[in-house]
Length: 157
Image 1 (cartoon, rainbow, N blue to C red):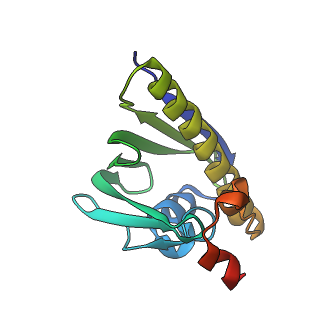
Image 2 (image 1 turned 90 degrees about the horizontal axis):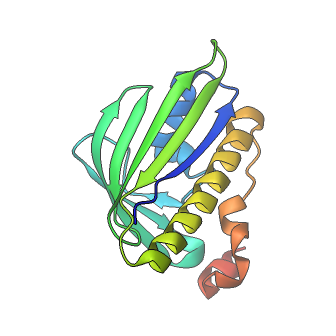
């Protein structure tokens, strides 16, 4: 069974700014993960942490095409391939597309992974749109499953 997840969102900001938001952890931590070991660069392994859930994972960056494409292997839950593309829509808007493929397991496991990935990437795109267009931190990733926060995270709030 082969499933490919695709999520898209128009973000009304210039292509370079939107692309940078996904490679620069100083921006990405405003809408997705809470900590990163560094900027996405081709050939580099980067760790991302979601401290509220007490989890983290690594991505192995395979390719970066400035302002237009990011390609990495992600080891959560198994290695899958994630490709982001950033297509300008005029001078002040960018269509962001993310494709996740390579899910493994039996049909039930693959379906569950694909549903989770679809939901997750759509949440990230909506949160990125709110941050980049309006400067609003939605806390959508953290608020998706508040009952799964680790105790230390709740104590800091």
